[in-house]
Length: 517
Image (cartoon, rainbow, N blue to C red; front, side):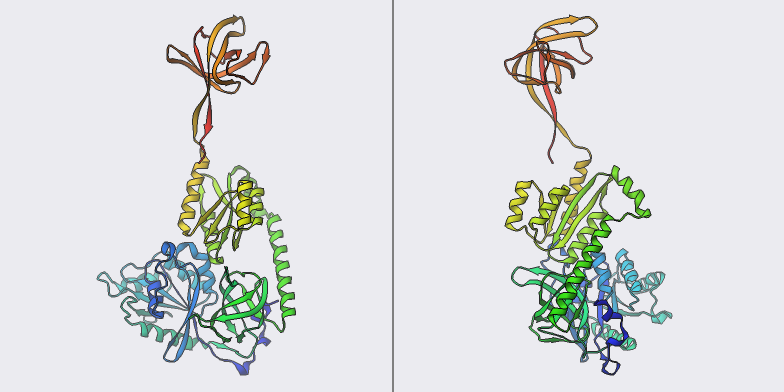
């Protein structure tokens, strides 16, 4: 099992250990300048032109400071991506926490602190926007102290650097601080062993197939290496670095994008290089089989803790959703956001979620479970589109996360109280009336247009004025009870709770139809 490589002492050769670059995650509240700092560090503008302004795909980048490399993970900083961010921290050596000097500690700042502490990762605080008129670094230092992040000046263990990412102010000082903290950590790796590491991101590419961004944590990864990644396997066909250049080898703390896997893995999956393709295939297939069994057991198992909820869930109307997206990060973010929605007892159930195009098996599952399909940055295959039309399965396609959430909430609000509109289905005229003792008044009528049905509502109209509105007690053709009487035919009716029918009264039959939303 590949996890053993991460815990076995004997895997690394003590004599071969060398210093490796630190892996750094930049975290912080939205709009505090996290992306600007990353841009300043790599002198590029990645976030412009992105749908919804959310950094959707975790990338990783290397920069050089004083001849030493530093690897940065670009974890999305939006609230919806909490799960991705938590995973980003698990491969991290150092967190840079960006806090705006004019805004102070915010909900996502606290979230980032908790993730870093849970992962036991040292925090360097970058107090950003010190160029702004309302900047108050002292307030930020005080607020962070309340949340257990103390500067070394106050006797704590976090380094604080005041910066302006926008104006490139004190950025060198920040990077030197990173190298200083890394030195204290004594980060080492053995480049001589077969590579192991973690998936930072994965997606399906139309031309290349499965593409995965890997962070090598130990060993050296080579083109043509047989590899097991999560529950999938393959051979490293091609490898590109963070600058988009083809490379043949990648050492510890190096992020690379690879092709050659038979399926897209999940972000956060471990990978390991195997001796040969045969053993890699066997390990990959075994892991896939185990994962499937685990999934099946999980769906069947009811514990004492969730038994009450399961029983109670019978009362809760549920919206079933299948999620397909271009990258695992988006899948998880969408699932987490949708599951938080609750509109007066109506909840969202994620029936299935995966990376890749919407295929026929998704449509089959949607039909069987009465589910919507939500596609995020993906499209259905022609066969799936055809099948969805035939099976009347609804597919919603989006490229902005909050639009999906908004649409789902609106749809759910519509589900709660259906709206109805009235539809007149027929008109009849009373030709004669019969009073039957102990029964009431029967109206003999003729249908002038449409039809009168047993379950329709009726209005009695006299001289253009509605004098009664109610339901039918009976509808007969001669002596037989019937379901409907159509245009030009005669019949007899009784109205529930109303006996004052007169000759020449108009009977208007109508039904209430639900408005399709």
